Image (cartoon, rainbow, N blue to C red; front, side):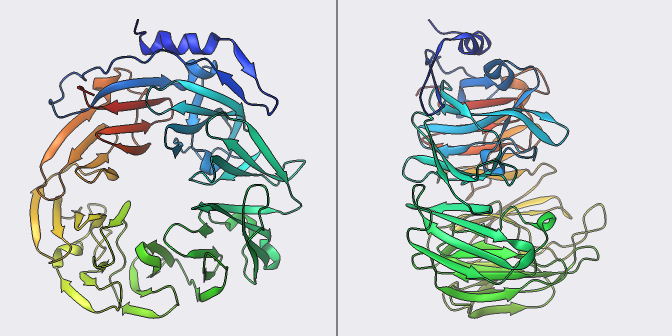
Length: 465
């Protein structure tokens, strides 16, 4: 028998649970529902496979989903989850004056929406956005009585704690390693370690003479996602080699400048003026710190997805595509720079690219209200449409790009610009607060998606699956 999602969640909330010695709770799985066609959508659109409500699962009326990566010490108001393959891991808690009250970590079956386990999640400073050796690895906040790295087993929720006397402020993971940044940032006395959950400095330790104020600590201080390590504190940035930790380069940030990491260990250094956040120039440098490109004026493109097919796909800066191996100009196209100010008077000369998907770039020009697809190998325009609707590109499965805005999800074919399907949130749930924009989307392949809003997480899959 298939249970309606609301009844199903109430059963979950009342089900008897088995408490493990590690503090996790293994929860009885519910039966999988059939996939429901969403009213008003085209045949190509995925259907609703499952829907879960934070309040129904947790039992508290104001409970909401939160992204574990942001930690549970403060409420960053960021719904989401860590995608761990067959399981997605999320936090449920109650927002309370900038804090998360009584947060609990949940493991959710990605195929059915069933709750696999739950475990305590108080006083977490943050978590890695990808699992390592089957664990979601987090670190305790400075307020914790016993500082530790905390691992949540993806399959069972069993907790492993590695006590440490470090003052950890950032953590990242890649491949089989966890990278930990710790120390006193206000004394420029910090270190980065590479290791495992059980032995967090097993591979190497490097000291960095850089720092900032605690209140200015960036959420992305440590990044290891693009083939090298990038460590940013205050006005200082350092690159390091992932396997041995050897320092590779250093750079400085001034005013409102920033760095953006991209494929194949390239870093884009954007010089942005604080007055109106106007672009004042940029550089691209490689994993050795060698400057490949330097420009004045136009700045970098704000990409929500950056997945070039390979190293032959150029990197974009202003209206130019540069070879990411040697910095030579491959082609230029004026579509890459905003043609005028936004409706609020800002934005002139900003980059228009919003996503790099294989060998296609998706562009959005708010001044002309146009969306464009560019062939990244040739620089030729593939298509252009006039549209007042253009959301954030949050998913790509190799076939369609999935965009989100406050009203719903829709899929665009990057090479043609055709809309493959459109799913309004209100077609899934008539309550306008149940599923909202600004959430997190995960592409699971074969037409399957998971979307998390503060109150609701949904699973989508093809109707005939």
